[in-house]
Length: 393
Image 1 (cartoon, rainbow, N blue to C red):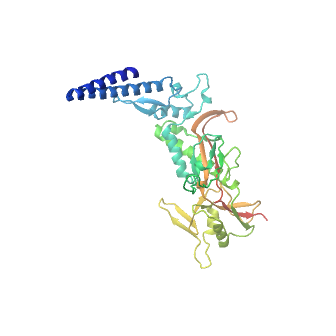
Image 2: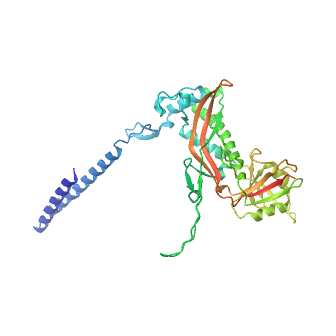
Image 3: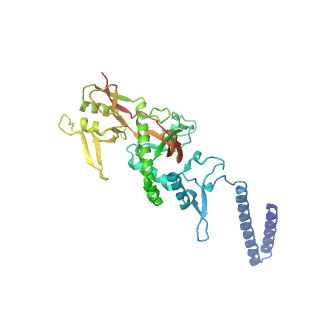
């Protein structure tokens, strides 16, 4: 039904209804008006169907990550990477190097299997990220995004700031300075070691081992970079930024109550936390008292059964000794042994989700499976960064 015919038929029905009303034939007039409504509904349905058909024309994707499944006659969209067939294929790829079936891989047939990054099943990826959140001391605290690598993003997009404006047309409005950050695409990879025993297990057991191995390695790599990453070939660490304030500890001296008070005096962000190794906390601060003999530090049993540390009421995040220096009275170079920082000001960006790839190591004659993620990170605001540094004499 084209629009011209629809309008002509509708006008004819309207003219008939008007004439019937003029003749006093109300029942016939109502019947004619009902036909107008039916015609309108039919035309709307036809127009919508044609629009949907036009939208679908030529829109065939190269590789569709979704397949149709269901036994009730209704088609339900299912993630292709969640099918039992793909999970078995993925397990065979990781354990034995078996090629992923062509229908699951969007690649040219002449491409070598070893050259194709293989997608990890969707729920397995989710479990890896959840595991990293549980294992991590730092990752759960930072702001996580998923912008494309190389894109300049306004800092107001990732760290929104409200500003007061005047009311009315022509009035002065306060302007907020908007900076930009650009995320690079650094490749984070970890080798995945799977035992032969796992090879003979069902997928849920294989998945558990795979998730544990990948999450352990990547959590440590990410958190190390967040704290002290060089910013070249990896994310830029917090301690590579210029601190808003620094408290110096003379080599040979200990951290004092006065030093902690100075650091707190420089910190204006209530959301900031202390960060240090457990050895620094226990050796320097755990037994410290103020002038009235009140303890400066406290260790409480948390809800999850883990101890919770605090200094002057502020939370302490205890980190792995690989992440930063531990306090020592004698140092060969200036060492940041503790710092205050609001981790919400650090943006960790994952541009490409986790994939896996196998390769042959010519030096060891081993076939290695590695997990790969493309990511970057940097601090967008350093106002909350206050460092405590042992100065080399």
